[in-house]
Length: 184
Image 1 (tube, rainbow, N blue to C red):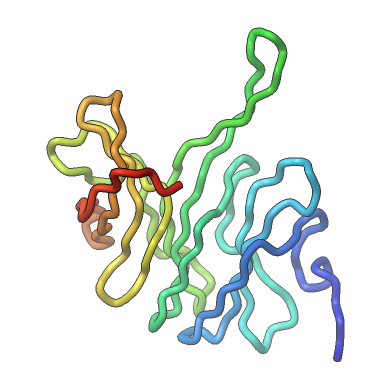
Image 2: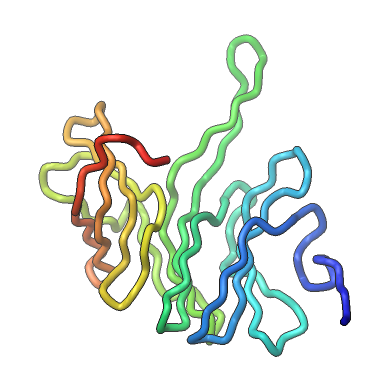
């Protein structure tokens, strides 16, 4: 059996495996990576068809953007994932803090190796009574739709969490069930 390092397989130095997914429709592997050390690194997604020697990056995320919560479609060659934008700041006492905000939900075609859709704050359509909202994570991606956990606010201060359906054709978020306890 031939053994190769992550680096030899196309995964950058300093990264380790967090999650491995398989797309039967594309005959492709998707690997979610994270820092292999205690220092912070953005999570990254890579893919390879089973007959390729190396993984290739999914998308072109910025240095402070993590690719999180990947979900492979069971019958189409697609992977959906969330992108978080991270920031670091120093408080008045000189202590460093790390924070982040939802940036986008992306759909990547594993057959052609291209992003085919992106839903962001700018094009996400919220219900009419909601003033602020974002996608926390993906919970299902199948022929019947794309389902997410979403944070939604009617007044801008209190956030409620829902399981919601995301209509990809219109980028409309439709709440399905309130989550009275937070599942984060």
